[in-house]
Image (tube, rainbow, N blue to C red; front, side, top):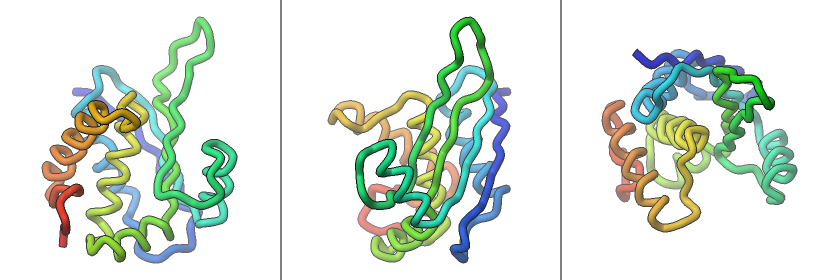
Amino acid sequence: MIELTTAVQNVSSERGVPGSGLIETWAVTAYRKVAQENAELTVRIVDEADGRYLNEKYRNMASATNVLSFPFDDPPNLKTDILGDIVACAPVISREAQEQGKTLHAHWAHLVVHGVLHLCGYHHDIDDDARIMQRLESEIVEHLGFPNPYSNSDG
């Protein structure tokens, strides 16, 4: 069975952040759906200031975003099991869940899955790629027991 070793680092002061066990379950489930080999992943949960800093530094956007994915590139002539890092901005995720009428856990699960798929090479910049990624996200999130994240409401 494909394994994903997951380290969760919560440096956010936001209340309601899911526990590391749930985040690991969501990440592992997503990874096993698309991966062929074992890997290591870090999920870091941050507040808005860190989210804004990272989004500006790496995406030239002057606001925090919900989730960022940082794939790891192995050094030349060295193969590691490191998949990469996901940075989740807890206040943004909480705000979005409320605005979108979603449960907090459903939105967190979706964004963890979304981040893992990015690390596995999936993207949504082109319509065809977006359809593939959204289909996978929906299948995984529904398998986890949450409603389709792309439906109007997930309760």
